[in-house]
Length: 102
Image 1 (cartoon, helix red, strand yellow):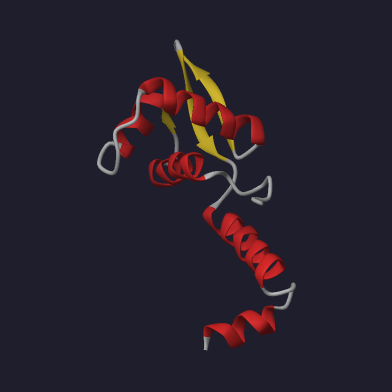
Image 2 (cartoon, rainbow, N blue to C red):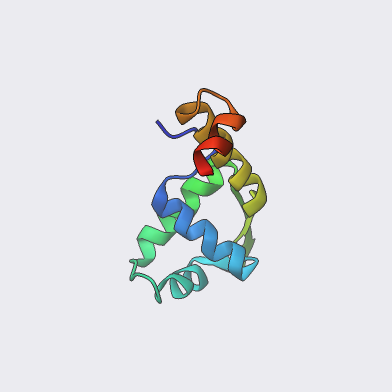
């Protein structure tokens, strides 16, 4: 079960594109993703809107479209993901994770 703070895989792909861009419109995020995978405009729009509703990105109106900017940093997401990993697979013990990684 995925914690609510960690975006699902497709939302995470959009968030990663925003981290690289700094901020961007749906069109700009879609272009950034095109090298990895082709997404429909409406798919990227839906994913960014979901991220905004979760509080992972913020958006502002610019002309007739929205510009999205990450609120959740890579570092914070990494910490959340590692905590989830430790809690779910290593009984909450970082020492068990360290032993496993050796």
